[in-house]
Length: 248
Image (cartoon, rainbow, N blue to C red; front, side, top):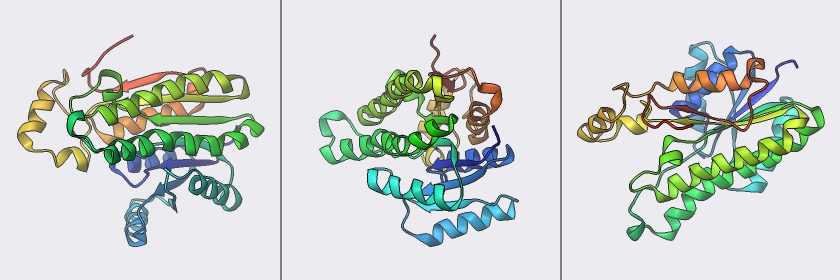
């Protein structure tokens, strides 16, 4: 199957940027999505990546809106080409103890991190089925596997992504489409580096490798799952966490 278009939601983020670069290096035309209404930010990002030799396209879409996702996917299919790879990387956190958590903070995390996976995947799936090829890669989290203090909303959403991945993989396996998830541990993104240094060092001390992950290490895993080398892998979760959490 000739490589064509890879669509990366949350593609302007720390991990999303590296995923976009890896897929571009692997021969895909990459469309990164952002919910940010500040077009200037997207323009700056595109310009910065161009300086490094990457030519990315950016589309705006609110992943919490099914109709927004449908319109965006249609624009890409019409003007860029068929979407062969979807990476669901868009995500937010609204941390807090459950006893103090507002319903709005529960809803915001579930609608972005979990509903967004449905909204995007549903809209790329029919064209993938008709072409008999596709790669769907969901960026989950170690905290979706083990739970995390103060993150009932985030842990529930990320665990939900695993269930979605396993179920959909079975539905579409005969149609040439693989569905997998990747669960990063703590990665040195801007978001993590903003954590108080003492707390960050405490987190690092719990990681057997004694360091944070690199965004490129997540991207390399996504690149592999999107490649022909991963043809027989579907319904899997690949942990990339430095040994922070291990399981069968």
